[in-house]
Image (cartoon, rainbow, N blue to C red; front, top):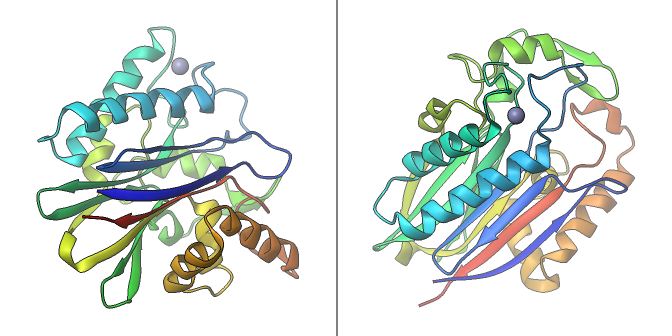
Length: 262
Ligand SMILES: [Zn+2]
């Protein structure tokens, strides 16, 4: 079973658009995609509404549909959330509310994982080595135009053209087909000591500030999950030039770190 510690905190002064769910057998971290600075995305539903509905359906599926694959469970949860938007919403809008997804599930003697969007699943093996999978397709888009608006970000018109499109990048939004674009894999439970699910507000410790994945696990071991967020905020405030990074100076930060217990 999963013996987990967790933390989820908003960026300072903001609301938290991340969501975590943990059971003894599976865990989920969702990160609501921030609203784009465009006047209309086809519906009035908020990012927290989307994330909480998607999480509800995903948790239900994980709890009851134990033989369904993770991409199928995610596809069903996307479909159910889309149905709840109702007919007044234009779900064909390319910037319809969306979230990134990380899932881990224990099944048989396997650890299954899924990541979609810039979420991360990390693991530490019994030999002490640690690694991770991040769906970083959004970081490798050819000729991606970066603008400096409220923050450094991709031009929303560009995002609208490449989000959930072949050759672009994928998130959980209204199209269930995105679930089949998730990165997935399995590990043998006997090889795995710990797993971690993290939103990108946490993983910038590794992506920007030179931490190793082993450092992340060790930090939680020594100081607890809450201290990961303190470490992120300190690294961000010590950054001599945060404007060099694409994205917000601080982000919602969520982590589930779980030991695999007999
Ligand atoms: Zn809607």
